Length: 145
Image (cartoon, rainbow, N blue to C red; front, side):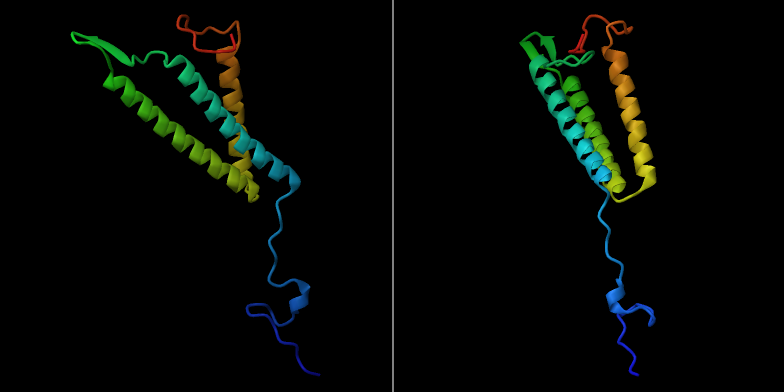
């Protein structure tokens, strides 16, 4: 009786037709949906933030224009703060995308981190946008109140 040839790296008792090397298992449908929802959430948040900034052209506490003897000029401090804020947002969304990819790959810690991010985001939105919230007035930046 001749011995069957084995697949490189496979134990000799494992035949090639038995599934060696193990094939990648696709992520469950729920994880795929969750991944797509996180991506959609990031896209929608960026779009809403960009649209609200373009409409108002202001950020509370940041003065984009300063009065000088020659007229009104764009403030370098305001522009610097916006660039810094954009860098922080890009880093934050990069991490969120990384966590979403890791969640789709089956990492439990990524699910927990995304859950915490979702809870913090929801509580921050509900606390600043609820009509009875103790938020600074004027200027009131929240578009939902």
